[in-house]
Image (cartoon, rainbow, N blue to C red; front, side, top):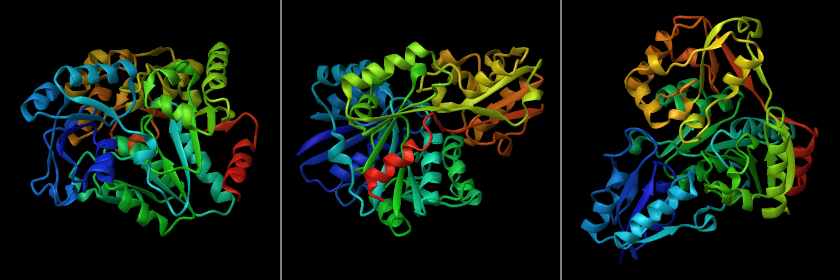
Amino acid sequence: MKKIVILGAAGRDFHNFNVLFRNNPEYKVIAFTATQIPNIEGRLYPPELAGKNYPKGIPILPEKDLPEIIKKNKVDEVIFSYSDVSHNWVMNLASLSIANGADFKILSAYSTMLKSKRKVIAITAVRTGAGKSQTSRFISNLLREMGKKVVVIRHPMPYGNLNEQVVQRFSSIEDMEKHKCTIEEMEEYEPHITNGFVVYAGVDYGKILKKAEKEAEIILWDGGNNDLPFYKPDVHICIVDPHRAGHELLYHPGETNFIMANVLIINKVDTAKKEDVEYVKENIKRYNPKAEVVEANSPFTPSDKEAIKGKKVVVIEDGPTLTHGGMSYGAGFLAAKKYEAEEIISPYEFAVDSIKETYNKYPQCKEILPAMGYSKEQMEDLQETINRVPADLVIIGTPIDLRRIVKFNKPSVRIRYELEEIKKGQLKKIIKNKLNI
């Protein structure tokens, strides 16, 4: 029996365990480790989910303790199971594992993808913040216009009580409140819900699939970070971001998506440099020449563009895009520039507690404010930080209207953004051909 440790961030790690190791007598999982997301270590993967081989459950330990975990437990293998990290990051962990006596393994996409009875369209990306959300909305609307019943299954974000998050179904704002969703979860679920689509998420994606298949003709996999699909797709769409040209070859497992996908969308062409778009195209020709290529814009629309001109503003953007996505700006920042804000005030010196910690960990985003809200306390820190900034106006560049959750002491403008094909009808034609519908 091989003793293994699964490196994760409360998502892919649990899926890999459920699919390959839960009932496998050849392996004993000593621990999960946790990183990226605040306050997810120190928990237990509960025995009710871990199965009969783990009557006491499985501990979730800090990744920084990996050398000690390996040596103390004589671990045979370390399984890497999270996403949106550089190849250097992955190999540093490989070196650490090998130096302490354990083999290091990355699992194949095909060994962890479940097969659905329904047709599956998977939306993935090469990096967080490339444009999966607006692409998922575009595709779900497209399928509805074609008369298809679509159910969205979202990549996991189980940061709370795991026993209560095995299978989660969201069809209303009240469902998000019932499940005590974080801001990150709401950013992903709410746009689908308000658009009239049911969203599933949770911990056990085998059970989730069985539930979703009962009410769907087509499953839309809305991926998280730049992770691989959990379900074998009939159409695999991967978003490439020319604002980070070259990252399609530098990050794990985004490069795998880039090579695997049968449709590649070059997004944000309207705001990217022409030479960066061309660089991405050259990489497509070299590494995935058989993929169908779609060029798209992500135009942004302020709720009141006149309110921005001449104002001192503080900009709030999608949290994961700025943190492990590595971006230093988003749609809100671009809108502030385009619509002639007098000044974009950095929230850095006004940040409190957990928001200050976020800036210390991700210093590239000090000019704008990541919408962090993994706990009630962090949401309160976010609110206090916003309200301390001496700005005339708050620009909200997040996928949801933060005003529903956070109370501002100053006026605000919300920025919306959607996918826009440069060649109209291209995605509809591709999907109809590949799904034979």
